[in-house]
Figure 1 (cartoon, rainbow, N blue to C red):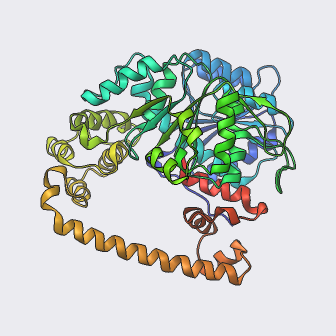
Figure 2 (figure 1 turned 180 degrees about the vertical axis):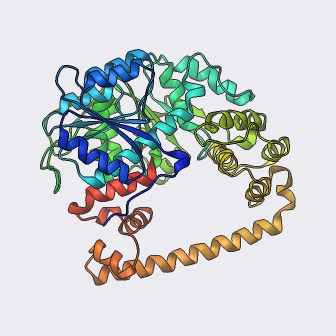
Figure 3 (figure 1 turned 45 degrees about the vertical axis):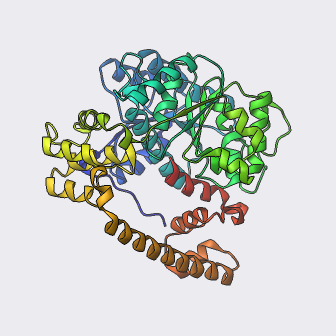
Length: 479
């Protein structure tokens, strides 16, 4: 039985359930309340719009598409016109794929098909909040009225190229270390592209090949065991918008061939289908690896590389743009102060100075998390202790003993993981690769077992019946 997830009082999101069915509202209210969400139920689109007019808004809406008078699509359209951003998870019937596609293009973040599955519902809600947090984190860049948030010379050069490339209908390859801001750049390009359709991000490293193919291109009913209904893929949902293929280097070569066909001809077919579908979406690809090296080894198709590499941009790591560190700290503090109900009015000068000297191996993402931690736990000693785990840039040359010690720790971690992998594989062989039985024998969470197999690139051995659950488990660690 899946453990219920509870939400802390400091971060208690409000969720509106908008559905004209009494039993659905009652079920969802119980479901959300038991997990710590602040649930409110309304039975019509009219009530939602009245609340919007009064200045009320939730953290999330669970929105039924079909309701009398003002339906879910009408509500989404009103939100879109108002310029407000309210994450919506739409609830649809089995045969409403065209309507779901339209809802996604009107701004819905994701969709669920009734009757609702509890585990799928919980994962979808978590995914929506993660997506919305990512979008909020990019607001400073994607808003055309706000200046590009960097004074670094290299970043300003990248911005100038983005401004020229954005209106052009060509793929863009975005390079850079993890956490450096590749998605920020992709959203910046989309915001200035003139495309009114959605921006959709897909993490190519989060799913095994067959599940990624279904995620990108959709599948027909009966395409594989467990495919009980047709499902539109991300290319279909994107319409004429933008698709960001993150971690493109991790895409399987067989799937690379299908993506190449989309880039060349704008055509694809759903998994298990024969009908040719067209895509007008713009493709932005991102990776922290050097694709030219993967091309040389045969791990990445050369023809796909040249198709993607029409325009190439590289985001410099944060350690190469130290003048951005303090402004980013203050921006993050302003953004999250209210969300975490923090008593911190401004970051201490000593902490900002320490942040400015730090090397930030995790780049902007690590800096953002460091600011969040301080807002929640404003303890200077704790914050500085976190920084000491990795030597600051100014002391790296003098840190050889510490580097050697970290290397020994890394070797120990590698040996431990190798032993763990050996035990898990031996157990799986003993139970004929029944993962649930193996998880019970190993006394670990089933989802953790799936994630380990994915990390070890053993996803191709997933049984078809477990594929959808594996996709959901992998997606939780990917978005």
